[in-house]
Length: 124
Image 1 (tube, one colour):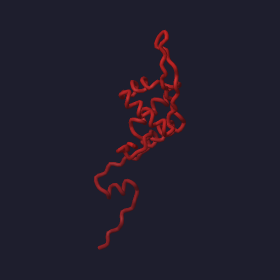
Image 2 (image 1 turned 180 degrees about the vertical axis):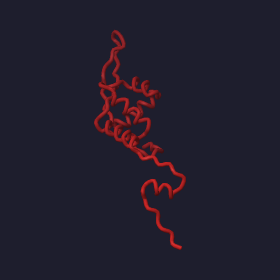
Image 3 (image 1 turned 60 degrees about the vertical axis):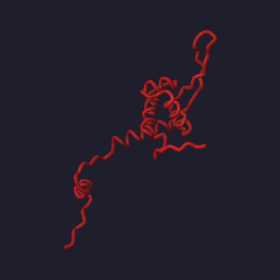
C-alpha cells in the first residue's frame, strides 16, 4: 500500500527538507537523527521520516554506528550526512530565491512596463 503525499513538490524541495539539507551541509561529520531534530526544531519522528524519504531520493546518506550507553549497553544509531545531490538541491533553491525578480505594481500594464514589454497599441 502506497501512501501519497498531498504536496506537489518533490520531497527534496519541501521547506522542511531544505532546512534539514542546509543544516547537514554545514556539518563536517555525519549527525545523529536526535541532533538534527533538535537543531532544526522539529519532532524527532518527523525528522526520522523526512530523512528516510531524503535518503530514498539520494540527497542524504545514512550510516549506522554503535554507541555505548554504559557498561554492557550498546545501541546502533543512525547518522546522516548530505550528498552532493543534497547540496545541489539546497544551494540551487537558495540561489534562485536570492536572485528572484520582485516587481510590485498595481496593474498588468505597469507590470509589462516594469519588465520592458511593449504594450500593444489600441486601435480606434
